[in-house]
Image (cartoon, rainbow, N blue to C red; front, side, top):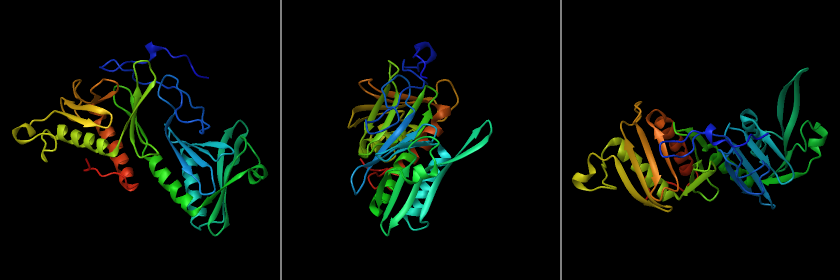
Length: 313
């Protein structure tokens, strides 16, 4: 049951933006997870759709708690973090010849003890085809799962799913000290950030690779305090830098450091703001390491997917 949105339950940051809060999901109609546009941060951080060689899509939703919803065009199943790891292990094992069949198992605690059921079945059908079946309903028997409709995955589909998992694994929800911010990669190789807007609804801003690189280079400049490569400032102006203004695919952006990088004082914060004030985040000093770690992982994924370079732009 979703509770009514109450503005007083959601503190605003220094610039008047809403902070923490749970809300509706995001995404397209092909996803089965109850997407909506309610107030509060969505349960789903990022999505990926894998076009299959024999038609249709395999849709994957990454949840804020690390869980994964898989939809194969016939049915869907939401896996917790451990089950999601088991599912990916199954794909690798069956897909690359390590096993002929793999059942993804769920263990649930009940008043009478643990209940064990299987929620996904991968089976090698021939040299280059793996079938994927998902449980048609909670608590379905093994026979029901064995006879559920399947999608056929070719070798190149498995490679695409691996890429999708790399994309989804680089999705993070970071507590900035001024509310949660999501950072993620989209199917079309954009870098996204998401925070709550003034009405409590999620605001998403999508940067192309060049712009995302420029923003992160600007962050490096302001925390180091000088523009060593003179990327943004020349000569004497490149020293004692605390603010960088730059152009991106979504317009002008300001990156500014107040106080000390990773400091613990009340005034220590990093701001990344759209010049038109349609979006923006403020990251407290004590939260900047977590933000830096998340962005580094997202950059690693972009490089692994061969569309990003930290020094591009």
